[in-house]
Length: 394
Ligand SMILES: Nc1ncnc2c1ncn2[C@@H]1O[C@H](COP(=O)(O)OP(=O)(O)O)[C@@H](O)[C@H]1O
Ligand SMILES: [Mg+2]
Image (cartoon, rainbow, N blue to C red; front, side):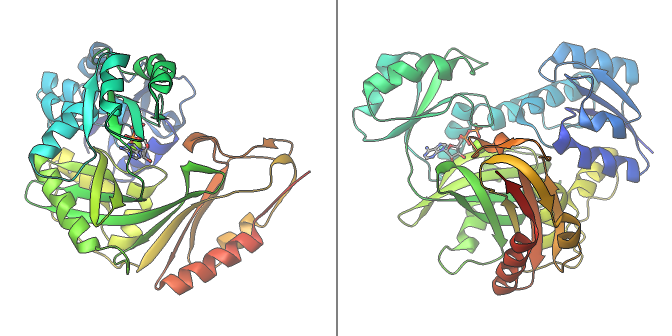
């Protein structure tokens, strides 16, 4: 048994805390809110902002953990690295943590390794950004170190940059600056992987679909080993080169790409697992590797051997899309959970709630995870699940 300090305690951190407990470890979890979902699975909890490095260090000094970690949130990655450094524990180091969370540094590192990426510039003013835009039709502005699409805007004119600059820069922490990038119009992909001391393995690749009414919110990620239209072998090797260039010593990775004109362009890469149970459940379904256990083993001096169990050909992470209105009835969840290939269903709404169309990743009303051994079987299972789960609105 080891003593673990888990920084961040939202819903998506529950799986890593539960796995740590199943493995027999003691867990102290820190997060900003008293009713943080992961607290109820931990042995102890401390209410503190995950961004507060010194505060989290004090917690570590009190609890004396053998390892400190986070699994699902970028903003905790630099705090974990700092606490580990100060306490002499295994970690990725503050410099590497900065590379993975500061989007400008990420671009500088990855471009030096020859990874295709959009043209970009670090800007401290509207004028600088407008100068960059003058060579291009469409750009995107983003804070240098935020997450969950906060402060991100597509811009086509100087006026639009002026309109959104302040909203964007308010989410930048490291510097009063923003990143402006060429807008890549193309299909999106996610690539998850795990790095041990000796090797890096890509565990899952997905192609993303988006809601028709809101193309910036994903409604479906289809995980397969091969894709008839896109060369996944080259994507795997590009991602492996990227992670080597970033210098990650160990841990989980989640990277986003967009494909245009024969190239996979890097959007961003993170030193953590993919959200909505990608790293805890989906990577295991399609690769046979239990990434979270392996990650905990790496932190606690256990075996780093990559053990591959049985795996499936494909999986889908889908987000429900019901007719907007007030919910009068919810049917079929229990029944659908018994259908073959249904791994998980979660509806985050109840009778009486008002449903709206998804505005961002957080306003989606629920998800499902399915697996199968052919794409046809996956689509059949998905159709059956959608016929079974009904949310009636008026
Ligand atoms: N250069 C770009 N071209 C096209 N789309 C982009 C670009 N950069 C970001 N996006 C889109 O915006 C989303 C959020 O941007 P990202 O850099 O991943 O920030 P965040 O950390 O907030 O997730 C991406 O998932 C992608 O859909
Ligand atoms: Mg992103």
